[in-house]
Amino acid sequence: MSKKPRRSKSNQRPVREGNVIHPAFDDLDWHPLEDQIDDQRDKKYVKNVRARTEGQQELMNAINTYNLTMAIGPAGTGKTYLAVAAAVEKLEKGEVERIILSRPAMEAGESIGFLPGDMHEKMAPYLRPLYDALGDRLGGKRVRQYLEDGTIEIAPVGFMRGRTLNNAFVVIDEAQNCTYQQLKMLLSRLGWNSTMVITGDPHQSDLLDGLSGLADTANRLAQIPDIGVVRLQSVDIVRHPLVSKMLDVL
Image 1 (cartoon, rainbow, N blue to C red):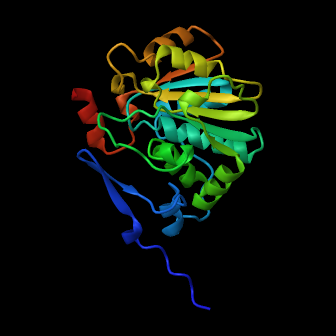
Image 2: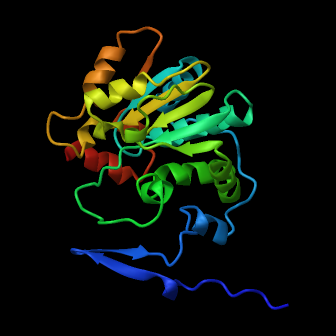
Image 3: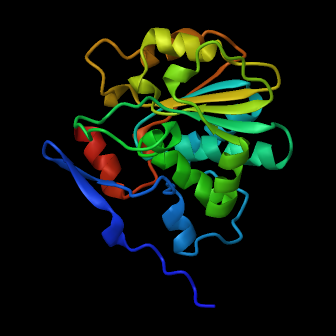
């Protein structure tokens, strides 16, 4: 029996929204980890993550010590990756039952127009950095399986109200795009036997001036001994060396 031919990229119909073009898919089977599966990245992954700077080590220690940790710092310091890696480690050890990922659906200065699909597919472009980190730790196929059975849950910030998150590892990414009231709501979701890590860079908010609540929240919570507030610096950036130099002058 001949193999079923793969769907070609020609089946994707580009949709123009103003000056922005994004693909619309003929069906809703697309998944943000699809390319990771297709390019055979689903292999045995190293489960242990090693800190590359003192600031990263401080963050890892805080996540392992406190039920709530705020990771504040510039892009490229590994805030999101270390948070997701810690979540996967706790899940694999059976210390939590699920991973919950949340991120504001905030466009970085440009409109991408209408996105097709259900809630998970609409949120996929915003959560791609989290998917990438999960794929690196677990492999694409396992991540997709966990998403399907609910072990990994995508929960947009607006859908978190009214919930109590027990036995979970919660990662709130790009929190600089949350208002003070949104962060207060998210923080109050923390339940029994749960860990929450909030990451963000107050200097990269896409909200109007004065609306981001991340810096104020971090300053207030730093007064509580049982909460970890880790402030990463440009020396903790582990991307290209030029990134640190550029961010120092921009």
